[in-house]
Length: 302
Image: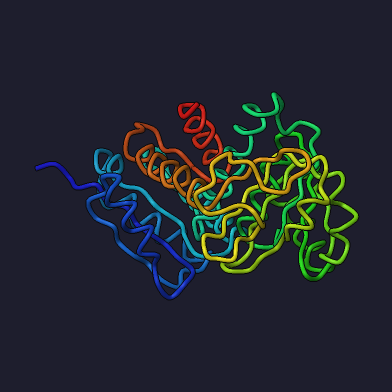
């Protein structure tokens, strides 16, 4: 009798995301075991219980998923899990807290596609503004854009918090290789004239960029909004937009809506879960790998 495929699903929250469970089952994981309110200091014991109980053949049918809501903690837990492995007893691990890694990857990859398709360019040297950039999706989108060569500024209600998050992005996620900047929302108007790309990564049902502000961005090329609940996070972009012209944009900018981003995110998430099941050697997956997969998906859509 073949051993079942078991995915140990860890979260720092009191509940495991049903979305993540459904995705895992649909990707072929037969057993999805939840572990709730997990702390970083518990990772080593949990991982070693998982790897030593199934033998060399069983570990190839075993993996770990790290959820929760905090990107920093998710990466710390992924690193703790990797350090807990004892070769040849090793299992793959995927971190995607609140879907932030796959959502950010999908949004940035979709923006790259539109830059290439409509403007024959890429993110290199572009000025990127991320609205509500202090949240999980905004943080990771900032890092991915900065790594791709863009100049990135995150905006939030409080400049002090924006600066703290920008420092975290640069030192932790960017590993000292990025130079993400921070501003408060009160200075947005003076940055709009030089913006090439704008991402809205705020809470559902809150408009972050008005039609007048879109009109005040004469160099804008692509804007993307992860909010699927009216009103749109960026005026002129509905949830179904997938490279559609933004009404009132003086530069002919195009928009990407939440459902178009979600379609890429769903495929990337599923593919990462499948990679853990298909690889003979353990893989450790986070936002960088999610971005690579999302790029492959958008390339296939051209």
